[in-house]
Image 1 (cartoon, rainbow over the protein chains, first blue to last red):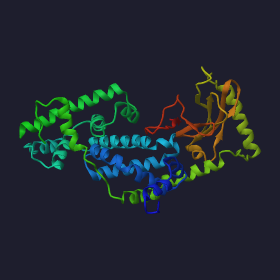
Image 2: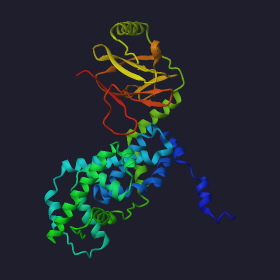
Image 3: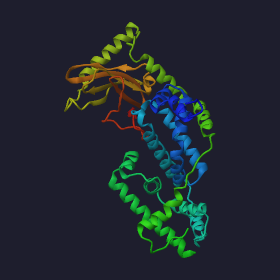
Image 4: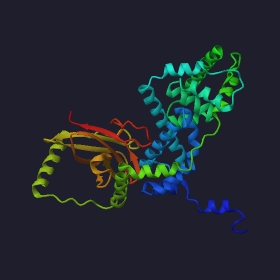
Amino acid sequence: MTLDANPAVIHSAMERSDEQLVRAGAAGDVDAFAELSRRYRDRYVRFAVRMVGNRDDAEDVLQSAFIRAYRSLDKCRNPAHFGGWLYQIVANECRSYVTRRARRERRLVHDEQRLQNVSVDGHHAADEAREDVQYALAQLGAVYREAFVMKHVEQLSYDEMAEITGDGVSALKMRVKRAVARLRELLEEVHDVG
Amino acid sequence: MSVEPHDSNDEFIERIARPLRAPERFGDDFEDALVAAIREDPTTERQQRAVRRFALAWWSVPSIRLSPLAALAIAASLMAVASLVSVRQATSRDRPVPVATVAAVRDTVTLVRFVFVGQADSVALVGDFNAWGATPTHLRSGRNGAWTASVPLSKGRHEYAFIVNGKRWMPDPFAPTNPDEFEANSSVITIGD
């Protein structure tokens, strides 16, 4: 094998484990934490965008969540499972952001108008279809939106969701069921208008 | 978005969830902004300094220098505390029972007795009042598995936790926890009004 034959293996051998990076980060090594961020960021971007509704806000929320994680690295009891621990913080930050925003802004009129303007002819580009559902999703309360996104977008099991949210499986199943029912109502209303 | 009223539930879910599963990515400058934000955040810098001090000081015995008058005053306070405070008994040796008890009030400082009941080789108290372990308060082992330490606290809200055997972070189950939902919560005690 030459050095160029399989650079991925060489790179992998030089990589530090999550545990090593967490311990280095807890001791103040910001670059080690940046490496953890590069390692896990993409896993949570989609979740954050679906939760808060747009990429700009999602980027702010994710950065805020990661800073909170950095501040609390010394409390990460199981550094080998850093990813799951970080997911808890990201989910919490998204939920808090959505709740705060809902209190701060009353956008129902705006959103209803937006929904009524949605065309339903079935020939939209994929991003437009996504935008329609995203707006319907924005009508749901934070916990219902979170449950739907975790279950049907991120495709987590109920046990995984329970571990991340700290809520019971029965409660999560009920939230998903109600979220789906409400989305159906909202999107069928749009269909009727169209 | 076309949603048919006659869709089955699974079809409906798949129809609306599929477009949401499209990947989303941020640019590689995300980490640059993150690192800059962390370095500009005075909280994280202060906290990291405290953690480093804590790590260095953890196994050393703290030396306390007191004037004779101060030593007498503290000794008198602790004797008063001993007569006022009843230590809760552990119902099980496997179940640690930390307790913080307000013991005696001075003009602006309240002496609070922290009690941890359970099996341990060492117990320390960390909180905002000792910079989260910059000068850790080591609890003393007594009878019935009770570890105690008395700490003067100023008026207001304080957060704290116990460190058991040098590594296990343990909030006080009898005290409220701080509002964040991290894996390792801290306990809250409010002194005064």
